[in-house]
Length: 486
Image 1 (tube, one colour):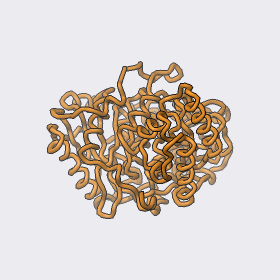
Image 2: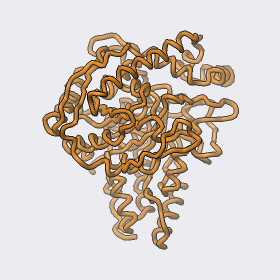
Image 3: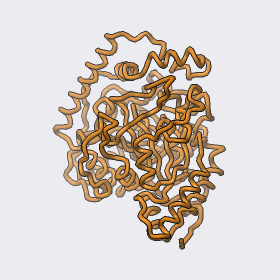
Image 4: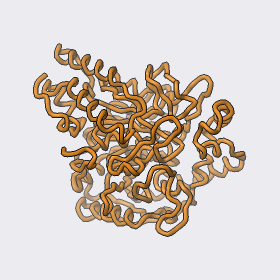
């Protein structure tokens, strides 16, 4: 291999560029992996993005890929490209703790479908990224590992539940990461970390098996809400990763048939003439003034620079906050979770999860939640008959300090600790494709995300609009100060 570059050059490289240069033998997979592992060694004591690092495995796989390329053997589309995997996603032979004391020694005997596909594409697995316990939170703290920090300001949260995936990509510890999203968990850390994250249409990326153990089967199964999705620094890198992980699989009964989407092709072409709806608050959410201002300016890019027609709208659905948690409860293994509390002790679990598990849910709460979900879906499809895209803030607030689940006051209004998530989980109700894209920064340099939502199963337009916005308002050149000179 020729043309080995410096550590910072490699760590700032996009996955698309890296894959091309490796296949052309101008870049060494071994040197790439060494560079990324070196950055992890330097930054991990501060950021705690990874809960399990697989440095030896990564170096072995990089050497295998390098030898295959040198010998002219066929390799996959991600040959030699490092990737981080969220610790709710099963990895054969690599522990999958899920942020839980109950799973601290759990090593799956099978890969999740997406991991199978990454391995087949010859990606280099760097390790598992940190999560809150079972993903039941929008931040990155648990009782097993140190809390994940935000690269833009380590005193603040990186978001969650794909906490470590967001921090790892933002800090250049690999260009690709997998997250999962049952109520916003790809989009939340993407917004807080200033990167791009996509929740594709429900079923676009198959999910199996999730966290499982014969002692506590099914504890993380939010079957009608959960998505797995890419988290990257650029839209094209997300498209590249989707080209590998999307597609049907019989192990996931929710998976969609192959739609023939040209994922990388989706990132070209303008969006002039598209009809765009914009909701700044869904009609009920408290929103930080800086978020309103930054996202409002980003929305103007669509009308002033990209040639779209933009209308401000109020979808008019009933406030779905309580319904969301009832659906989560209905799709969780409450019997297994309650047995887990008895077995490992409430003191070894996250307090709000214990409270959630021990709640005496009623059949009426579950059926009421189902009716609210249907109402949201009906309001949404009627709205989207008139629009190609829907824009909102990704989150109601900028990043906040570690150690809390969320602010209790937003723009002078008292709120519940999870109400800063109002913009994300309705799209898990509807299953529409939704991305978080960096909209801009606060006065003190913290990222704010714009959510781009597509029509039912129209992932292609979300990617095309994302790429158009990226070209008009680029961000990938901007790095956290913790990185040093790039």
